[in-house]
Length: 115
Image (tube, helix red, strand yellow):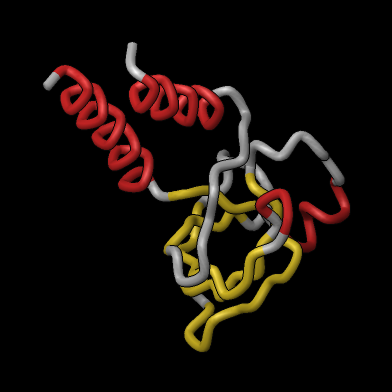
């Protein structure tokens, strides 16, 4: 396994095992009002990022025609469970398309190392 392949695979494993993936200004993410993936997701745009995957979001969806703003939103895999904060801020996660793209990047990295 080449270095690039190892890095790509490690990134995927970290994310799948509870690591907090990177997020950038302008990324489209899913926001869970109750703080778990069992809740109905809303589309959200990252408006600011902070350490440890804590972000500010502009959330759109049913009943939020002008959008809602939430600051201090943690990733769904963040191990720090604070029920009061989760109820107030919710949690975020990347979209399924993001994770599919990460898998594709890892596969391409594998193919490149075999060339």
